[in-house]
Each structure stands twice: as C-alpha cells, then as structure tokens.
Image: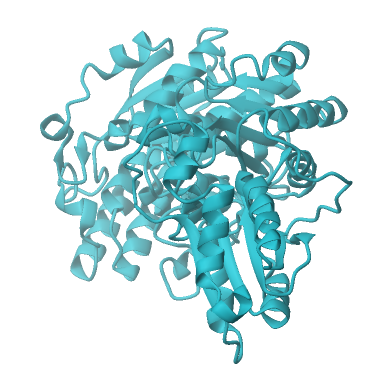
Length: 311
Length: 275
C-alpha cells in the first residue's frame, strides 16, 4: 500500500505543483524518487510532528495541497491538537498519511502499534478518514483524497501487501465496495485486514455459511446505507479491523445500528479488545494472537451465528 | 521615519488600549494585561510594516500577521477594526452570545484573522509553513508572528525555531512579547527563559532586543527586516504586562481580572492622558 501510495502521489505531483509531500524524517528508500525528482514539492520536517503539521496547515492556507507522512501514531496522536486546530478548524487542504496501521510494526513494540488512530481521527471535526484494504484501493484512495479539497486522514499498511481486488474497482469516498455476496451474514472490513476477511468468507463458504463482504475503506463519512442494506438483507453484521474495538469501525457501525429503526440484528465487533497488546511479533503473529487471521475471523463468525444458520 | 507617522502610531496604540479595556471590561473577560503589553507592538506592525488591503483579505501577496498568543485577542480585534477590516462598532460585541469575536483569536467571520489560536505554540509552525510556501512560490510576502513569553515553554515553538533558520526563512519574523508574567506567576519563577535573546541567536535567528513600548524602536525593528539575509528574524520585545494603566502594570491579577465599573473608568481616564 505504501508503494502504491507513493507511486500514485508521484504521478499526481508531476501534474500538480501544488502538491507538497512533508515527511517526518521517515520513508527511507520509499520517498527517494519523489525527493530527488520533485525537490521543490518535497520537505523533510525532521523529527518534529507538531511543527510538521502546523507547517502543513500554513502551506495549505497558502494554496498548497500538503501531505504529512510518518509512521504509526506519529502523524496523528503526537500532533493531535495541530490536526484539530490548525488543519481541521481551518478546513486546510492537508492530508495526514500514516504508514503502519495496526500491527504492521508488530515487532517494534507497543509504541509502534497503531490501534487507536482510527478512533481518534474519526472524532476530529471535518476530517475524512480513509483506510484502504489493498494496494488497488490505496492507489484509488490517494487519487480521491488529493481530488477532495479539505482535510483527510489516510491510513496505510506497509509495502508488499497482496492485491485483493482482481478487477478494476469503482472507488468513491464514503461508498463501501462489495467484495462478495452472501445471505447469512455480512463481514465489514476496514484497512489492511481485507485479505484475511475475504479468505475467512471463503472458508466460511466451505462450511456452508454464505457471507457478504464489504470493504469499508472510508470510515468517515461511513456508508450507512450499505450497513443498513446489509442488516435488511443478511441479518447479521460483523466488523473486522486491525484496531481497537473501541472507537473505530465497530463503533461507527454500532452507532448506525443503534439509531436505525426497528432493526434487530446480530452484531459483533472483531478487533483488538485487550487494550495494549501484551505481545510483540510479526504482523501475522500479532493477528493470530488477536484472532484476526483468516481462521480466527471465520471461527468468531461461525461461533456467533445461530446453530440453525450453521446448518 | 516621519514625526507624523510617530503620532499615528501613538494614536493607534492608544486606541487599541482603550478598545481592550472597554472590550474586556464590558464583557467581564480575562487577559487585558497581555493585550496591553502587546498594543504598541501591534500598532507598529499594522501601522508601519504590514502590507495588507482590508478590502482584499485574501490577497495572495499580503503579509500575514499571526497572533499566536490568542488570549490577547482583544488587541488584535482592535487593531483589525482600526485598520479597516470591519467596523469599530463590532468590537462592542466582543465575548457576547453569537458574536464572531471570541475570547481567543478566531478566524471565522472575522476578516483579517489569518489563524485561530488559543492553545499556545501553534502560531509559529503555521507561520513557518506560510513563509516556506511564499519562498517556494516566489512571493514577497512576509509572515509576522507574535508569541508570548509563557508560550516559549511549548516545545512546538522550538521545533519551528530549529526549522526556520535551516531553511533560511528570512521572510519570517517572530515577535516575543516578553512581559515577564505568565499564567501562574513570574516567568523567572515558573520556567526562566533568560538568556532569551541568546537562545534565539543560538538557534540561528537574527535577533533584535527592543523596548516593546518605544514606538520608534518598534517601527525600526518591524520595518528593517530582514536583518541578515538568509536568517529568520526575532524581535525580543521587553514589555510590561498591563502597560498604560498604572494599577494594572506588572500585576499577575490582570491576567485574569476584567476592568469593570470604577476600574474601567479609571483605566480609560489614564489612557486618555497618554501622550
């Protein structure tokens, strides 16, 4: 996703000199072509995220499309008040980009586990929150946030994730993409966990459970229509995210469900429920520890559905 | 500098102070002390240095002024009204229900305000970004940013202070309103800043240390930038909290107390006598 993002951004920046990429002294090897070929549209702010974000707002208020780029929680929480006041309150055309959503940097330790960013950023007034599910979505999301005039948060994974979308997608901010159809339940996924969710759905199918899969790449504004349609048509909703179960996709969907008229629905959030993870390790290991592998997700879904559906 | 200009700045500073006292007094609002300490500096910036057009607040070539010490908003609103951005009568609505003039600097529906501030340490990074954008776009705009002494406790100030000299932003001017009193005590007793000019100099800024109530010195300092081509500019302005009203000067109390009733009458009478 990181590679898809930077490649797409590079192409866009060549066409639009308003685009400025500001990095927080991170992106070794990744941002090099951009830095070398578009030096006037590149800036290393150093290890200083508050200044990076404030400067991005200042540049955006001077006509630029400014992107801040760093990893894990650094471009979001370290400078949250700059995001809120300088960027959001001024409706500044700033795109906050974080690489390393969830357990991408699992072995790096708890400081580098990005598990609350979606919750925190979702609460920022006027901020669009996007967490693409694979490199195809990452590329489309990059185009979409640049085309959108206003503050956005783009949560990416790492480099080298598999392509989940095998055919072209119709990507629109705020519009979920349906990956599979099924009548027994709907699995709603956000961010880089998408492949595990799709595979879990395939596994469930082999067990006789037909699930719809939605890639909810835009967390805010949430596609409430797609959620409510899933309730009506499938009757059970599972949210899956490599993020805390507090405040992210699960909470956003729960808000829609709780306010909907007369819908009684089986609902379960699948995500990190332990607060800080007590573990360190590879992304796959961490997903396994927290029930977020293909098998873990399938098991959680199957065991929550009524036995009659399980056939 | 002409004598006429000097009179103008004196008059402007006096009107800013009178507005500040009336606005905070009528609204029962805090922060009159830090507004009065900044009044002469604002008069100098708006009266002598800033290139702006109140008819075109979005003019791209304009100089920007960012009031990072957002609590001293009454002084900024006053100088904006006096500079023609909106009618002076609007100052009467300060702090009232439904008014655009909030108790910290807010930009919505207030022409001339470049940045909403109130949480300290935000203005200088934003001004730095604006300065860099102007340099890269070949615009001659300059960015003035006023910060308070207490604000220098914020790490974000020093992040920008490190960045700006490295990028040779000589179109950036930070003005420290060094009135020596912060929110809960004397700067010297809370977190001593001295030697403050040495700190900015060591970070790579071209620094001038002035009496922040000497309008001739202020005019020189704000109009002679850049002091040294390729280096950002810092004006350390020694000021007096509550300047111009004898019973407010150097008193922590007037960070909070509003000049109401008899206090307002006395304060306005003293300011009227200002030469």
